[in-house]
Image 1 (tube, rainbow, N blue to C red):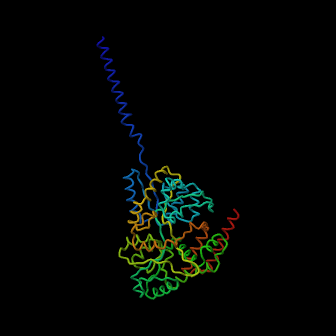
Image 2: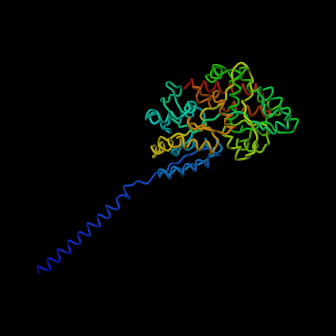
Length: 444
């Protein structure tokens, strides 16, 4: 009996040991799998067709480095992208990282609605290491100053990826065909008009640009306005102190009619998206293009042998200096409602480090936002960069025009080009809408 009891006790001890060992294996060996959280996936929406491959390569590098997967989703053209972002905001389905295309008023509305994370503390942490990487002009369009007119808490709400300028480009081979000096683009508007007449006589096509995308046409109109009346008068117009029926604004509108009448504008330019315009210029179907510094990479991909130069929009007046749109090119914002805000911010810090910025510049031929990353850049890109001191942008003017007024103004230019309306008629229509918008604002 004693032997039997001893056997039973030994058997139970062995069973208990196996049970404990089993629990240890399950809870001890298995616990790391449960305690290790899976790495998040960050989604980025963008509109930059020329940067697609570079972004994908950087995403792969980042995943190999950190285990965090980054998915870049491309939506183009820019108008389609803007609509998608607005719809996503309304449906609360914005990705972790996205860009906002539009006026400072649009940017402010996203912030006030709670869709954009305030990055000020992150930018200024560790002696403002992150903030200090960028060119001042690169940060300006992402920053709201104290006492800004939009009611936004002062701070930095976006991360610049590159900088840019928007200027004129011209085909040097076609210049020779027209009997012009390929190293001397037009400097004033009359020279520009005279070349249009030569283009018309030769049966060639003049200027291409994505003027179905209204912001590009608005950009050139603002260039002319700054040169004709100066920044102060433009700002006063936006504030409602100067009417659009003012002779200076009619002069701005009339320039588009002069260009059309002289044969300077490509047939169908008002229905042309910029990707089509870029293809036409790259294939040497147009003498001129109005485009941004990003075009260096676009043209290189479409026609590596294209011989072209860069020049400022022709001077219209000696009264005020010329200004061009520029500064920050592309910027990303972090979704304030993202489950992976911290990871999204860390990725953007990595993306704007010197090494990644150099890679982006070399691969995409865009000007880096990180001031330590300029290095040796493409000669054509340098032609865009050397006029950076002339840049301005509506986002940094401190005031924003009503969207309906901008739309009426730009669509009015389209109607002038196709001969439906006169500059005077468009100016009056725009002013009528302006007065209605001012009345609504006053009433509210």
